[in-house]
Image 1: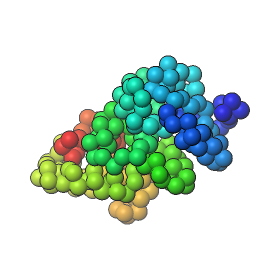
Image 2: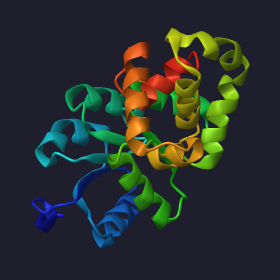
Image 3: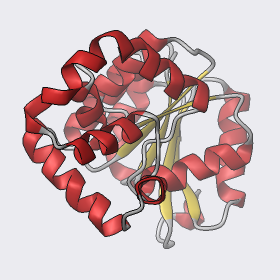
Length: 216
């Protein structure tokens, strides 16, 4: 980690209490092109005390830490470092934990058993403005909102039909390019629609937009 602090690329920190898993994450990150592990912590308390020193772009956060939980850690760190992106790593597929993580400030959610390519892809997606989730988790998020989303969606803050389509795609975890391809528009047009959506919903990012749109 010490040799990568000033290298160009995505700067990543790891917060994981399991020594073996933490070492595994570090190894994966250091072997990846354009990604550098700049810090690793065994618990939330260490991360809260020292994260600012490493200035990561992305933080991989274990949800089930000893002492202060990963969710509470993200809530505090996001308030201090609003531009840092947090990817929750967990063995759970619990919808309540997903929402608590998103509401705390996390932007992505991935199962620990995901293969290395999925992890690295999620980091790159998150850094590029995406909100990576496993397909199962994304499906659970959408299904959990389905009963209340249908009547509420058409009138939410005056969103146009196209804007609603984009938020619905965000809820499925789609990247900007996927949304553009799906709707037959350019990525720049997607970004313009997103700015209008954020203004209408009075939110600052895609996660908040999805949560508010779906009535959470």
